[in-house]
Image (cartoon, rainbow, N blue to C red):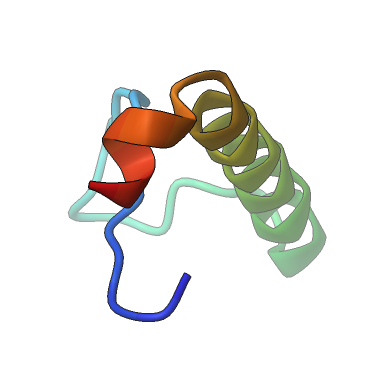
Amino acid sequence: MVGKLIVVDKILRDTHRFGFSSLQDLCEKSDKAIEKALGLIEKYHNAATD
């Protein structure tokens, strides 16, 4: 996936602050967003690879 963009449909709130209670919380939420993005890539493979 080098050189490709992944679109994540997540609303970001309080981007001017660190909006996570801990680094662990950040890791867990980012892992969920990445899993969702990978699912979208699998579902719409042709659009993701054009």
